Length: 207
Image 1 (tube, rainbow, N blue to C red):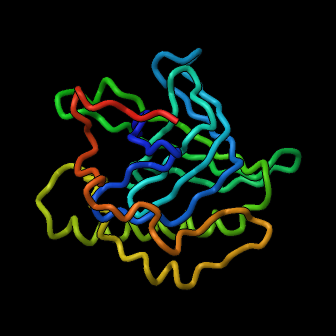
Image 2: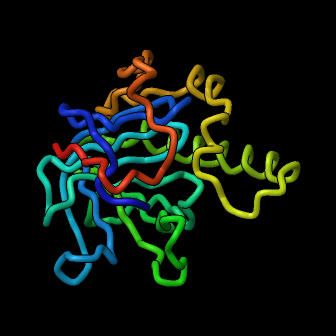
């Protein structure tokens, strides 16, 4: 996971090369722990979740303690679970590993736990697409890893995951306000990112 990924002025994440956004879900509450600089390391905010063939990005309605968004590569997510508590709203919980800069020691970074709470409307569209997509990404990564000598997990490898068939058969729940992207909202390839690590002088656009 990484904090404050690049965003357009309207809050939409700046895409990577070959990244395809699948959906956007507004009106969710997002919780995550072990965030440096926050009170107790825990952050809770309301906003929008964007899901693509590479990652999940939560963009807050307003920055919380200097953090406007969280970027979670799908290949770094594990232990995900759909929860339906009796007295609380439906939610997805899980763990996500940190995106570690090339010159940093992985041992200095902790795995984060997160939770996505659906407090406004149903989740019958979002939940199946999320679990189907993350399953496809893992399956594709395992297949390509067998033929690759790369020891590290490359989050951008997920960009080649074939998601067209999944999207054609996606079920749309009328009670779920999730917006599915039939056309990509940012087609200009010149704006697309090519690496997960920003240059030190490259500013983040906050929403």
